[in-house]
Length: 631
Image 1 (cartoon, rainbow, N blue to C red):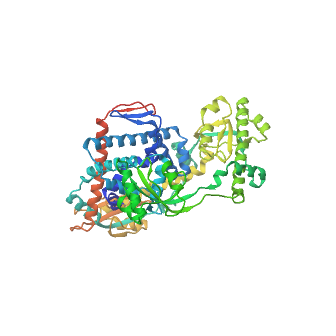
Image 2: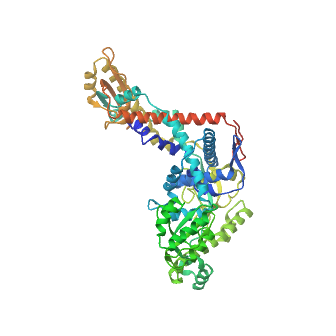
Image 3: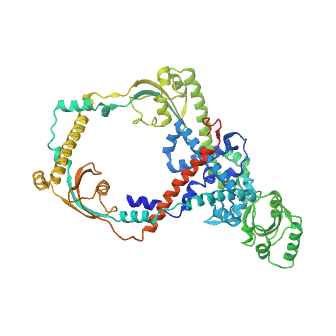
């Protein structure tokens, strides 16, 4: 309620708002967007700078994955609507445009994140963590696999943080006056007392006796409430290719599959490594040779890594890179590392794309191959699944050919494929039977195209080796149901409406009587009683509609009572009389929290205005992927 809204504005510091609103490059595109180098088609041009179509595609793909995880099956239904998909893509593009505008303002103002801020941000990225801690081995492996250098990643993270600094500056300048927060503090702790008379609908339902003519009159006046939705009657063929049992797969096929893909069952060798790295310079190689000599003379590799290595992440841990799989790092580094034979061996100076290295072997695990016996069931299950998929694909292609060759009936396709034509009764989009209760099928069943052309649909894939073809036989448009069909429902609704009208009249009578101090006689006649409402706050455990109305009512005066009707959350009526309002005079410990929350809310408004100002003064040209516009 009231105070919950104030708390929502005060959750954490303003920087939490920033993270939600601004740092969208990871949310939209992930680390992969930093390393991909796609064909440069343009989705938009912002003040002369391109936003590539691939950047939009990365953002859309990741936003779609996020929504699928959040909404589940419901999201699949949304994706069947082309308008929704277009709106989603446009929303992602607008976020990318806003990000680009902020980047341009950052460059204009010369805002720059420090090296320490960049380092801490990288260590906090979940992509580089294992068990909640930064893993240098994971960091090195992901960079190597993605093809991005540490410098490129740091530059991109620095851009993100610089963007954050700009918006921090904007939002931190927002404030709420002490007098405002003080007033809200006092209002949030206000107490109100009064009285309530609840008017039960059941009391008046007993008085309602409707004739057939009255019920029919209600039906005719409210035809929209008795609409029968559009309905269709269809024939359909369901192709359902069941999976093969894995024990039906021939042993020879399993053996052949194992041998053909033996590399999949090889567990590559691993080495636990440490290194000392120097970035490339004229004397870096000579410095490393000198360090190698010190190691050979007995100095600790780990201690030298802490003091001499320019890889800050691994250096803090004695140069430890963790466990590394063969073939995952820079080729020169990888070859030298896996050439080390014994624990404690140290390589010669190795040059990689990152710089120069000395590498030592801390531990090793040799490569091994899983025997066929260990993976037989897994292979058999995969082959069975593939066989079922192949069978389904062949049948699906033949079904597609047949329903196209014989477009006015499903009989020929059913006969050749050994399927049965299923006929339905009339159904609406809301009560479609299984397996028709799928948005892709429903959209086809209720489309004008199939009905007007009297033809089969194309094959509609349902997933899990299932597909369906439909033929619309008959359509029944939306129309009011006949009175005889809905008479009972009409009587129920008419009775409810008449009951509510009587209760409303009674509430109005009580309101008038109470205002004239004649409520006692009225209450006695109606056999109703008054319930006291004492010292209620906005957080009291009461009907939410009652609290909303009570705290919106004007304070009573000597000349005017404060009495109002209210519809409670259970749809019943009540009359409320406000007798006393008590507002604290002193501030409380909550004022600082309220002030922070109000400042946060104000900051969000100012940020939105800031973005609007950037857009209004920018030259934005949209590419072919969205409607052509220019500011």
